[in-house]
Image (cartoon, rainbow, N blue to C red):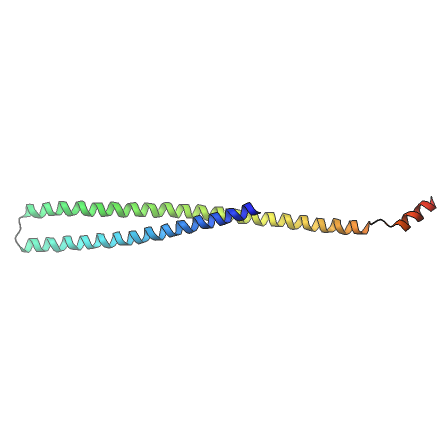
Length: 144
């Protein structure tokens, strides 16, 4: 019973830690999405400004290549965070499953304990009914 309680406490603690990490990663994901959106707007603004300033197409291409690298890096970071979130969700489901299993085992054990207690109570009552009465025993001996 104590072992099951410790398992439940450990699973709850693990689940809590996973939820905290999941929340942190979701926050990082949102920050990366905002950064990605901001970078795209900066790129668009820069393109318009350069075009208006009469900058040569080759310079714009070089700028696009540099910005594309930055956007690719941000996208890679975002993908990494999303993958970690998926992994944590899987771990969270596993911990929930383990916790449910522990709770099911606890219920089964409680039912078994209750059954044994009932049987013990019946046996105790039967024993009380069978208590030795010396007078009855003496009468029985006399009759023989």
